[in-house]
Image (cartoon, rainbow, N blue to C red; front, side):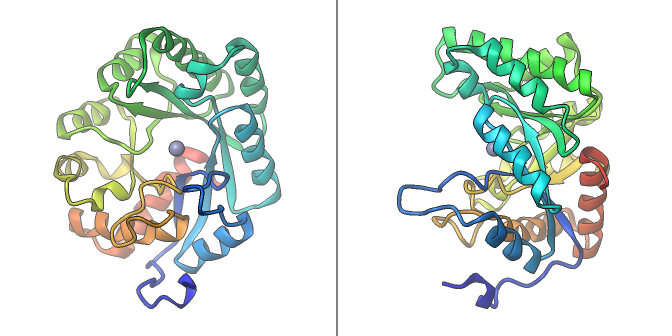
Length: 275
Ligand SMILES: [Zn+2]
């Protein structure tokens, strides 16, 4: 199906930024990711004028930095994903390469890093902690935000940030906490980025959390090719589908589409830069 011919895709009331995507990853074996050009044309068709390509290991971080230098609509972040850190045979060498990439002007943050306790054994958790702290150090050194991946690890992520010392700007990517955790993040001035999960039927606790997020700390993302919002569940996600999530957030917060787009855009540029 040609999504540009799909009448359900109506441009948003204003420009927005997809603050987290992976244009290099295939949804599954039967789908190839679209080219960056294709993905950006489709994204623009609904008003997604900027996307942030997020690195998960040295190779994808380098690729993210590379496409961000070629496409003005793309910014990059670089990091070792906690699951990549857990299996890295030379973690220190990889972290050094991330630290180098982090200095590049088109690289706007350190991410995704954090903790992932979903199917993680204790020995691997230690490597994740080492890597998470190293990314925090790099973020502070280059004065860029840190983008957190937190899966089944809320308490340890929060305690690492508070006890080790968070960088000035922290983003919880694909925020997955409840209303109580949203309050804690808000108290600390940490950004919360919501994905298509807010449209899922079984995600009431996330929708409750969304109500606790102060206007100035709200972000939106696809995490494409994953987490495709309703009504496109089962198909590869892409930045074009951000429109569904933005509209769901607008409805849930009782804010006009125009206002929510303005808010999300200004928050995104505050976090990731204005160029
Ligand atoms: Zn991601």
